[in-house]
Length: 115
Image (cartoon, rainbow, N blue to C red; front, side, top):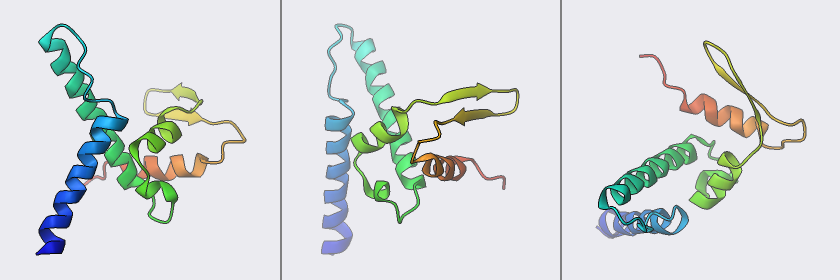
């Protein structure tokens, strides 16, 4: 019972804490209530995006269990040239980018599979 209920509750609290502290979702500083609600929806969307990205990282990598801020700094704050065509979007990284293979494997894991 301890493993099934109590630990799951603790994990949910940890994820809520990550949501509030590292995504700054508790900042509702707009004067309008609607603007604050939209802001909270955007924070929730970013939360699910980063959670999906963390699940897509291969398990032997350190980032598979990293906090949201580390994933945000690694994946979302990187310089790349974006090449957009009619059928795909390609990213060109610098030759010295050490995480290019990680980006490739995470992108392939996030592509929806045809059923």
